[in-house]
Length: 267
Image (cartoon, rainbow, N blue to C red; front, side, top):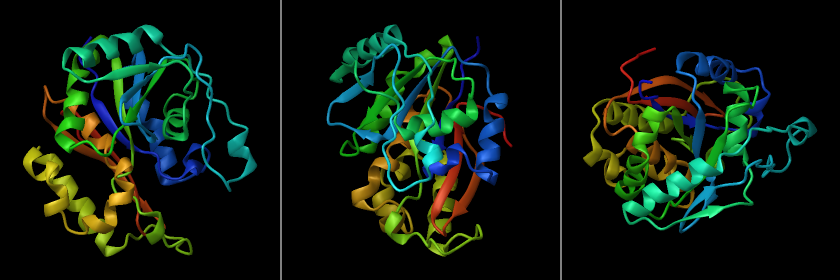
């Protein structure tokens, strides 16, 4: 099997799981553009930990880690099986590169995982392993963790970073009904797209110093949503190619973007 590309997939609002929107409809088609994986690994922004944690429950629960949304969301279950053997393989690979990692046999699938997978793989038949993120690591360290898992892609494992490239809830305009982005959000996202397209690791790792609008797009207290990008990039470092497959905005500055790494296919 050819290596499966890795992805960065924005999970946006939990409503993405059910809403009829341009982004939801794109996610409905995303799996058809990829080889069918034997398993899925998701680095989720909603699982922060100082030590790398790896979900190892054979039947992970569906975690509704949000409040104030319609009841329909709390009734959703995503009953994908886990893959404890793959979790142990991941732990071993990380240990070989000196990264402390622990299996977590209780952790379920938070909304950074199941909201997007419900659109991509609604049958919930593919095993899923959730991974924590550590936003306090340097981007190069996050990249290196993803890099350690790169060989899994040749074994049919789809690696996803789930977060948001522009994520600042305090700046959302909840009254806005169109998809017009605020200028600072679009400026940051265009800078990011250009640096990803060039695979400019030096600039990307120094985004806090170089990117326009970064303090609004990736506030220091919200960098956990940006971190999954580097894990996903590292997973395709053997074929350093990045393409933007989708982008739209909600509420002015909530960016729904999908980047694919390690694939020459453009959309």
